[in-house]
Figure (cartoon, rainbow, N blue to C red):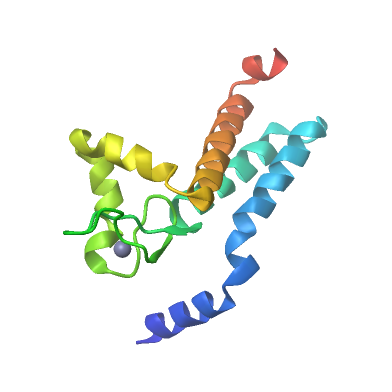
Length: 140
Ligand SMILES: [Zn+2]
């Protein structure tokens, strides 16, 4: 039961600690403005922000619930992960794999302000990581 204890501690930390990914995103933007920063640092920051968006960001679960129109309203960790309910945990990853659910998944990405913010951060860091890895694009 050591793992569940650790989890309670993390959720109690809550608040700003959950948003460390946005700090990484701010550092990423600063790295882009300051051209002296090497592509390795940009790539590393991009990866950090992406990991945060997918697996750590405090968003609403949104997994489809039988009988409910809005989906699950529990707090989830990351765009790809559901809440503490076991069935929800992998629901969104499954939605991405089953093509007929991809549209549902995408609409969930913009379901509320928090989700939109996290989605935009994910897109931005993905693009910046891409550009960092392809030096030719960065020159344009
Ligand atoms: Zn849920």
